[in-house]
Structures are given as C-alpha cells and as structure tokens.
Length: 458
Image 1: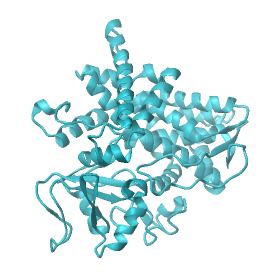
Image 2: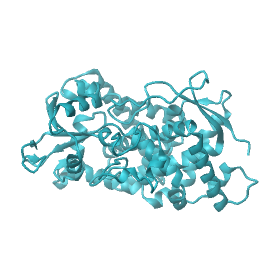
Image 3: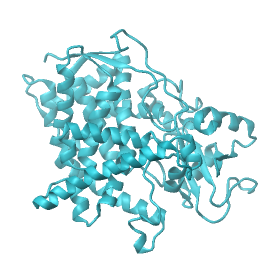
Image 4: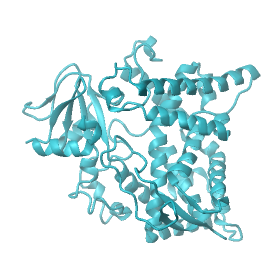
C-alpha cells in the first residue's frame, strides 16, 4: 500500500535498504521490480522487451486501457503493444504535425486570448492558474485532438473537462491493485466514459446527418474509417497524454516567473525582441504584435521561455515510470545475472532519482533555468539525466504541440499582464506551494495558490 500512498518515500527507503539499489515487491497481485542507478535507468528506457503501455495500464490506472477484444489493430494479427500503440501513435502524429499546427495557429491564439480577456475583465484581478490556465490548455487540447464543436462551446468544454477529471480520479490504490474488484471508482469511471462517448458520438452523428465536413481531428479519424469507440479512445488517450502535463506545467511556469522577477524580465525582453522583429509598429499593444509571429518562429525564437519550461518540467516530473517484461524470459539487471526482471513482471523507475540528484543538479529543489546554459549544462552530466519529453525509445509524440501551446500561453499572459505576484485566496503574498513528492503523476498542488496581476496599459 505504501507504493500508492507515499511513492517516492517508499522508493527512497527500499533503495537505501538494497545493496544494489534494486528491489522487488507486490502491488496487489502484480510483481514489481523497482530499479535505480545509471545502468538500470539506461536499460529501462532502451530495452525493446519491456512494454510501456502494459506497464502504465496496470500500475498507473485511470488512463484508457485497450485489450485484445477492443484493440483496433487486432484483426491484423498484431499484439497489444504493437497494435494499439502503433495505431494511437499514428493517429496522434497525424493530428499534431507541423502543417496542422500552423494551419490551426490563429484559432489557438484566439482561444488563448479569449481566456485571457476573461481574466482581464475580472474585478479582483486574482486567479488560480490551475483552474483558469489549465482550462485554456484543455480547450487547446480539445481543439487539436478532438473537435471544434466542443472546443468552441463553453458548456461542453466544462462538462467534458469534469468527465475527463472523473476518469483520472478513479486511479485509486484498490482499483489498481485488485482490478477485478467492483470498487465505486470503477463505476464512476464507466459512467464518465459513457458520457464522453455519447458527446463525441453526437457530434459525429450530426456531421453525418448534415453531410458536413470540418477541418479537425475528429474529421480526420472519421475520414479514415475509425468507429466512434476508436475515436473516443484516441481522444481520451490524447487528453491523458497531454492535458495533465501541459495544463499543470503551463500553470507552474507562471508561478515560477511571478516569483522570480529577474527571469520574468528576461522573458519580457525576449517578447519585445520577437515582437519588434515581426511587427515593428509600437503603436500597437504587444499582445497584438505577437499575433504576427508565424508558427515556425514560435518553435525557434523563444529560447528563454524554453529554458524556463525545462526546469519547470524537471521539478514537476517527479513520479514513477513503468514497464512490463513481455520478453518471456529473464532480463538481467547486471552482467553477472544475479538480479533479473522475471517474465511478466512489472518494472518501476522513479524520475525523482535523477531529477533531484544533487550530484547532477545543483540545489535540485530550486527552479533555476540557468542550469541548462552551456557554461553549466547540468542535464548533460549523465545519460538520460533529463526525462521531460521522453527519452530513448519513447519520446513524446506530442512535443511540438505541447511546447507550442505553453510557449504561446506564457508569451500572451505576460503580454496581457504585469506585476505578477503569488498570493493566497485573499490576495496576500505567499510563497510557492510545495510539489508533492509522493504524487503518482504530474499533478496540481495540494494547496490553493493564486496569481495576482494587473492588465498592461500599452
């Protein structure tokens, strides 16, 4: 149970008790091998015989699970890993590729500015970014990974976001350890899943009935012959792959910038430089001038924001990664073969082991974007010392979209607002909230935190 209730603390204790840093335990009826160290980390991320999807489906919970009965590639005689993962990656890669993002960029900017206009109109000038900014990210994700009908409808956005969060909240220790047990969380997950399915199906049915075609991900999936079950699986899978990580990191980076005036000013200087290059007309407010930046330059002209995001991700990605040995044989953990990962055993590696390693990162608990500058290059001290966008065999397939949306959100937030301050619900200054080191995945803070801001007058 400690694996679920205090994950990093559990790992720390077990590693300290092990002569090699590796250990084993049971999560319910599932045998798990916990690993640590440079060699084990390299093996974990490079091995072709350990399945990512099988590992996460069993030990993370909440995310969509596909088996042989509902595998959209099963009829082609491929297994779960090769089947569903290949199918999912192909579909997501198609909807987040550069030309699609470039074509959708004006609408994405409109969505972001709509959310920021609502913040600017607030009288108290205080917001919880893990609500307001998180919701903007959800709208962008729905716009790219699903359909315009939901992304453009505030009521449907709110409803589907609640359903998505309900599915995510069902990953309770009991439901993961004993997946056969009819715990209440499973019924909530089933209900939320059916509701999401119904909403997406109604949108697709309306298009068919009206003989209407749109330019979005849903239409792409329909045109490729995917049925509604497959489409819903892709949409929910895309939300789990991107929404939580991007939504939380987009919120945290604004808190870090509000708490560090020097780096906040460096980002503002970067925005001015880019705006001057693409729209020299300084009679326009910078939020209008940034709208002239083309897609390619959003990818390449914001290195300061990229540094800020990189250390934000390092601090937030402090959860366990999972695999399953699907090789049918022992996988040695050392040359002597005295420690092995047995067939069908699960494997867990905790990202915090390297992300918080003081021999790699100076003052590892501090947000310090300068640690990635060439004169320090702390992330280059060890192989796979930074795991943020995935490494080796499993890089993040949605990295272009994730970096794009967070970069644009940060840029426009600072273009809209100034005098940012981290405050409590009463508008009184407070420090940054603690990151939950025992969280199961990237998550919102356990305590309420707010941003105070003032609309810029330029």
